[in-house]
Image (cartoon, rainbow, N blue to C red):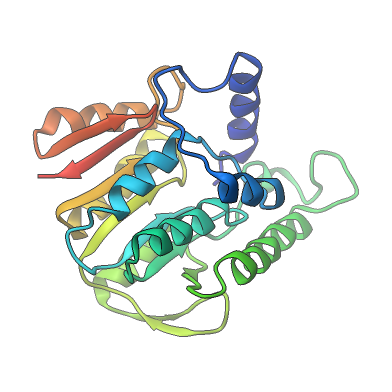
Length: 244
């Protein structure tokens, strides 16, 4: 989520230019619309089809993972599609809520707010949102960068989530939504970590990977597609794969 400012700007530009490509399948329903009214976030509506497809075809009861949490919109949508398909796979998410520009000084864009205050506000908003909209199936959210999260996952470590619950990490995963830092270096590493634990038949979705999006994650999805180890399920418009 370090690319937050650029991400918002690019999403606004896409909206002004007509939104997602015509080929993007949007399965938004009434609940999704109500959730999006109240829950801040940057949702590419084509991701909904991918969430729905994956959660209806999971290879096992292994955990789901979301990299990047922000205010919890995608987290709550994953919980919604879990409920829709009657799956009980636990959902783990990770974020440190450290945003782009926070290393340039304490003030937020020349305002009287500080980056620390903004960070705390967004984190508190996430907690409030998941307590409301995922209260019957609250995800386990660990305050870590993705590298830290997967290191702990690999070690089978225990962690305390943002709701104060102790939870054990580790084991195979059945789905991963990669929505962290979109630079090539970080997106590539997030995929490599995911690939290490993703089961055969499991799914991975790369946010902001649509052709022409301008993010370096686009180079990563090209490599994944060329590897022959993953089947491209759909570009909607983001790249959504199933592990062979």
